[in-house]
Length: 551
Image (cartoon, rainbow, N blue to C red; front, side, top):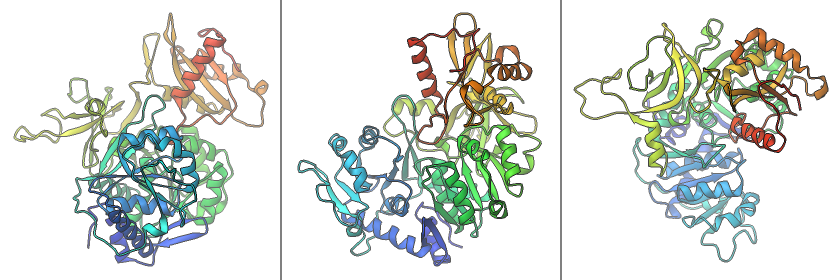
């Protein structure tokens, strides 16, 4: 049996095996594996005619559509590197990414190009813009622009050309982290990283050719793109969805017979509050969580909605794609655990000196193996902070090995129990120290969700002269139809006092109209909410530590 070693081969191998099987669905249209493979090959040939050199970057600024997938696999098929850009980003943010990794070819739509034109003047490396329109739009290129426009249909015409020769340790993609503060970082992933990740995830999710996976997350997000790679590895179908409302996700799952759903906690919180048609429970085989801790109350609600579906609780980081998962049979025994290492990865819990932690001792989660990325593009300093050499005596290392090994030091604090199951404590840069105690914001949020009195919530620390940090909460109503006056803040505080140690009880609670803002990857933007809250306090101070307010 032929195995995939390069990213585009995930499609090629399946196209040879089952050419007529459906690979992609977008709206009312579908592409078979043979059709998808043909268009990927033609796109790669088009890039070669544009003189794309080996490892040059191809930016993709589109919503989820056939062209997005074709370009994402066609660029590495030509020997280039694809750079998926979140369609929610603004022109200035897009231009930063194009400059940062020296994008030479940009694939976008005429509408998006109109918005980008002024910003593209700051991107000197850009030479070609490929428009999804089949004809070049009049006026789509300013006379002074150094780049030229090529319509999609024109790019795909002409003879099929071989791409540059690459191997599995070469770059395949650069995924930019969302970064709510500061500039985003470009995580460089190799063909080996992405193919090994696809095989690993597909193995424990038990994906098969009969699966239909829903791509609800952005394809610029590693977990979102994973829906494509895991599906293509086994010959399954992916449904591309650009949704406006959570109800759109429910409708699509029922209509398309989705068997696998992967999403982030904020989306699951919204989905859990909706009614699910019985048809979903008849087809959904699993739902998987990534991008943060799933509130236990939300997990319970989802399991009631689809009792036949298996829950997979996962933990990952873009720098190493995916790290751990909790098998469904362990969810009832260990609902707070992020599980154990995924296949073909090893997870260590290390002290600051690099020595292994004892059972239940907090330490830093460190990921080693084939999924460890290639660092941050053009950023030596940040790469050195996250990608570090393993200690010579680390598990799996032997004194006789002369070459060092790099691993990803996540910056996340976890503990590992005696049975080897891992538990997330918090990110080092988000931990709150109050009254001498270190408190994870996710731990506070978990308890708030368990009260069933809030719809969404976020916790963060604010400076306090006595406590060090006081815990501030921003929350939405459990029922969007209820007014702020109907929100019983005292009831919520009483529940907190019953469920939390004294030092963990919030010093301030602010009620806002939901939903809470997300970053481009769909996660609740804690840093943005905290900075906005601080700005409001400077304008109209509220005493923190004694008064609890609902605004």
